[in-house]
Image (cartoon, rainbow, N blue to C red):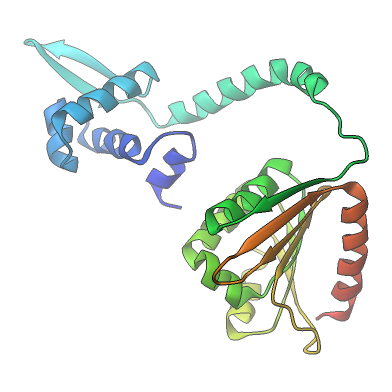
Length: 243
């Protein structure tokens, strides 16, 4: 994963990540130095630097009436995360108690474009459950792009989430299986008599079915324990027939 993208996932915008990384590389510097390095207007850089300073990511000292800035140690990001997690944990029990339980009523969500469909991946990471998947791999790569999928795999591995994956046997899926151990994955090839066009994910109590229609890709997410148990039965049956 690119460094700036990792910073963006912590809640920062791309130009904020760019300013921080420029300052990190320059060491002690002025706002003008940063502006010249990243070719961004000085006023814009100043605004971003002030924001990063308020977040504790940049600091300064004054010498001969000039401000010299420096980026704080990147370890500070981990400190931020730990502080946020600690704060959340203190209120989490009360938040859970406030949540209205839908009882046995399933929750169904519709995702109508590629960006929305990517939110299903984020939901998988959030539930912290291992994943079962049936994927027409070549079509999935064509829809989302290999770079994005590689980034998701890296993030999933960092979250220690395993996946059991059923795919058609193709040259690209054969190469995918060669990386199974490193990527916490167990891949099997579907019997040739079974042809699939859509993507299926099963995780936690959720089932996601994604149509790979090129003009209108659509995802349906069902949050229901009964539906999840039923789909796991079908998955296990096909898994046992695959190699």
